[in-house]
Length: 126
Length: 195
Ligand SMILES: Nc1nc2c(ncn2[C@@H]2O[C@H](COP(=O)(O)OP(=O)(O)OP(=O)(O)O)[C@@H](O)[C@H]2O)c(=O)[nH]1
Ligand SMILES: [Mg+2]
Image (tube, rainbow over all chains, first blue to last red; front, side, top):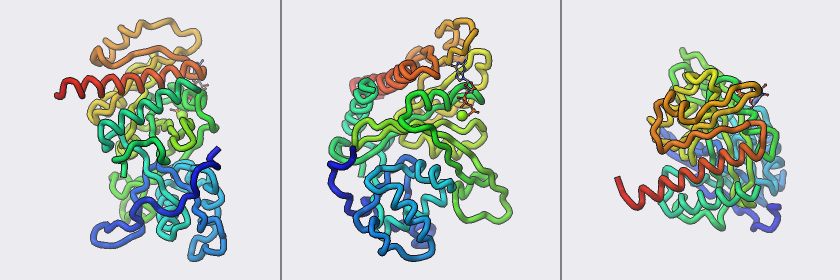
């Protein structure tokens, strides 16, 4: 179903944010943000570091299949916060792409309305 | 990042399902979700700081809060999530993350225990998150006029109050459609007559 789309190429959000004066690999990944394994993330050989097993698990879960942070946390039976850090690290290494949700709070009116209309017609088609 | 139209890019949106303990939130999510509802846990400290952080904050006790959710693929590149709020209403910080950027909320009510939804309604009004009230029809329960429920909850005329069967997919679909229609209507009114 997702197969026709272009291959994800890398992180779409800034991987490093300065928090309280320190640089940490912490993305503000929303619970509903979508994650997908990149071409790079698919080759297990590029995985290294302290959380290889978790990274491999996430790379397998999101290979050709969009999964939210919440889904990954639930399927791996890890707390949301732990999963968020794992994904931020992987995004920083280009192993996964992170797609931001469309926030009805932040989006311009036209974008919010377009999103709502798409959701509405999608629900009617169900 | 969210400045561009959603068509042609991968993105997601969410709707919050709130209500008192055992009112049918998980049932409602499950009736329409394409996956069996999943549960995820967030760790939070008693003080509400360092919420969901992996580092332990010394001297503060931590609590695990579970919430469940479902998923509806609207398109191959647009996914809608339905998040059930944790039953414990004192975890405001979790609610904060749950509602941030959401389309709106469904407040599910059981007319035998109306007061159970007061906290949710107060919270959504405070956060200015659009919501509707859905009365879950439990078996053997007498019919309640939505207008009576509206008065009992002291909510304004514009907030939709509808009746539903959380176990029924078509009924749940209709609840979600009503919410999105309501949010769209409110935005159009706001565009015509700015406050
Ligand atoms: N008869 C009837 N039973 C229902 C209905 N909706 C839910 N139930 C039942 O009520 C019980 C509670 O439903 P849940 O969906 O677990 O409620 P919940 O709001 O998720 O509960 P908590 O997460 O524990 O707060 C379950 O046994 C359901 O099968 C309904 O419309 N009619
Ligand atoms: Mg539940």
